Structure formats: structure tokens, C-alpha cells
Image (cartoon, rainbow, N blue to C red; front, side):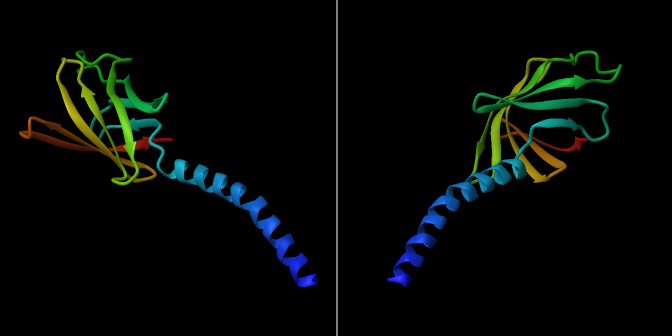
Length: 134
């Protein structure tokens, strides 16, 4: 009888703590795969800010150099990015200030490195590794 009560108490504690643990783990998972924030391009003073709107991610230009006048601060450069957990990557579209569009994939290499792969007509493939700005 005492054993039965102990088992029931342990079961209740488990059922109470399990949802809390799952919520905490989901927050940690979201944080480790989070691309939101400010990012700098390599060898360029161009910076973008990635933000989430509804269920999709977008990136706008927040800084450009004086010689890149065709690029406009505030231009939405990446759009409709969706995270695919099985592939551990984001897919969406690049929209350059000149009007060119291409598909893209973003892969978070680590907390501070983000790789952007651009693809257009299976001919043009470019890759950039951005660094997170703290």
C-alpha cells in the first residue's frame, strides 16, 4: 500500500514537471536556431537585420557604404524565409535592389555565422558567410 502511494506521487510529480521541461527545451531549441538580429557581410560595410513576422523571416538592409548607392537602407533583401527543421535550414527568396530575384537557403553554422546560398536558374550559385553583430 505504501509502495502504491509512492508510485502515485511520483507519477503526479512526473506529469507536473514534464510539460515544464518541454517548454524550457523548446525555448532553448528556438534560441539555438534563431537567425534574428543584425548581420554583416564579409569584406563589405553592408549590414542587414533579420526579423520574424508571423511565421516567416525577412531581412532588410540597415547599412550600406557610400559607393553602393543603388542599395537602399530599408530595402527588404530576403523575404518569405521558412525554417525546415528536418534540413536545419531556412529557404526563401532574395530580392536585390536592382530587381533581380533568386531563391536562397540560409544555414546557421554556429551562433555567430550564417551562410547564405543563392541560386538562380541552376546556373548562378553564390555563397556568403555573414557574421552576427552583437
